[in-house]
Image (cartoon, rainbow, N blue to C red; front, side, top):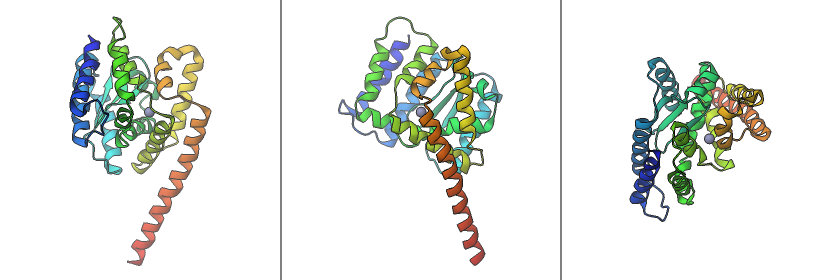
Length: 250
Ligand SMILES: [Zn+2]
């Protein structure tokens, strides 16, 4: 059943841009993401708990507004046990039940995770992969994977669209900046990474495995995030101080 999902997404993508891997227009990107989201949500259970969806929607919209992000974002919780988050092109962002539980509803942690995913959207990373012929390959891999299709497989297929290391670092930097500018504590990205590590060490590697494959949690990545948090806090505060000083002059 899931075969048809990604085959359909692939056909849609190819029909839109041909095989050359042209850059999608923003409108095309939004339509592709929307169609893929509709198919995904018809087959993977979106949380029926309004509190959960309201929470991630509230955080996501706050991040978008504070950072002037113009994509038509949607934020939803998927009923999947694994710890993961991902975004489709042009706006749809998903958090799994496993991830929501791991954060225990900590809004700062959720903000850095959601901000990371919004970074992939804002920087148009899937489109970049598509132009390099990478995104389409993954859709094909998914479409030919055999008969064992369950909800986890679909998310895994999205997860197998491995972004480059540079894309991941860029998304981390976005998550830090977006969350700080929206009034969240960006250090929560580090506490979230630590929770993931603990889960992995505690033998629960199976439920974090997919996330770690797509977002490798290397020491270098954690160190880079720590440095970026310090840099962002400093630079945003400097900008605020300059604005305040200018305000006093006028
Ligand atoms: Zn990522």
